[in-house]
Length: 207
Image (cartoon, rainbow, N blue to C red; front, side, top):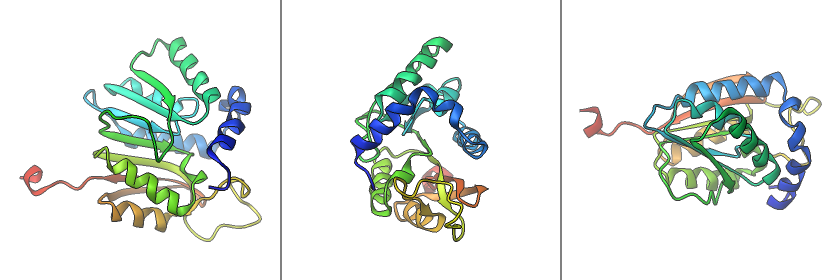
């Protein structure tokens, strides 16, 4: 991580009020795909890591049993709470948590994250994904800045001084190493995409 958790939190606190209006078409397309692939049922509890202003969490709340959002920025979560209250959405909750310490001990049949994990370096991403597996989710949907090929250094889709995106290959390797099967890879931009990872069916389940 190129900056501390506290530095990231302070940076997002400053822009929380304008954050939603600042997003690019690629970001919005990525968010839509995360929601589409998460596809919770009324029995699912969804854990949204790096929830920000709650765009993904609130979009999934209508179909899920419950959605738990975690972020390092209180300013961003204040925006999320306000939006939930305005919309009368009661099955969501937002609290402080990081990828490696989500501060949540309940069930999570689906884990999602959008445009947040790229703040971690490759080793930290592996730790975060290993932590996610502790929830034993059926599905993990990751939307993020990720490299589908060699990125053009003159046209980065990210801020090199604060962000540390991984290649798609590295992310797929980590996901498969911890027992997921990558069932979809959606390319939104050569530096933006969505990966869908699912638990393979056991022989007993398949029978």
